[in-house]
Image (cartoon, rainbow, N blue to C red; front, side):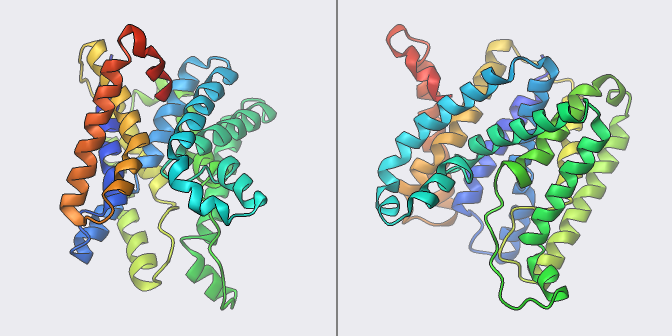
Length: 317
């Protein structure tokens, strides 16, 4: 089995730790450069998980139940940290927090994956499994999301809107849906995509990355956007990166790749515990402390879950 994607997911999980600990916060340019790289992390996760689902296309309910189980368990683990906030939150906002926005602590990815997959699955079948219109619709939703968030300073200026509020669009419709669609496209066109040379894929990735840099300069530096979640250029950039890694011939033993896969999932899910516990620290020490603690806890959970009386720990990942 090609291990490149699993290795990449582990690297991405560590980079997500960097998103929440800001190791380069001491220098604005290093911080912004790091920010550009980390914009590929969650989209890559969406594409990868979608690709593996659509490659086998098992019953959808199995996929949803697994994610729902993990989401509920980790929401309960983080609940003690949320009590003070939930006390002053209306029932409507609590509902939106847990069933649309996907909670805090990076758990929104699980909620987004479930909603995004349901939307993709429904749209794909309504469109009679036609892929081109599905791509078009998903890209339109990504663009709308960008207009309402990252591009808001420009779009509101063009519409002469002075006071605007950036909505929380980090969810299954505007964020997950386009990337889950991309994973579907890769899975369903795998034989054709294999014929694309690594050189062309690399050129596509470099061009997309340059577009992302340009997009970032325009909206972060020039327009001072308050949202840096949704970016149009991240879609092709993530697509080419995923294809490049998928076509790399890196082989490891199955047990090693499986361990890496579980490790990346757990690091992503548990690192916010240490973000909260060590929030008085800053920059590089903060990053390494959270990263190492997350790595250690994740490895311990995996190793314990192999034992007879701790197999229930498998539900954590």
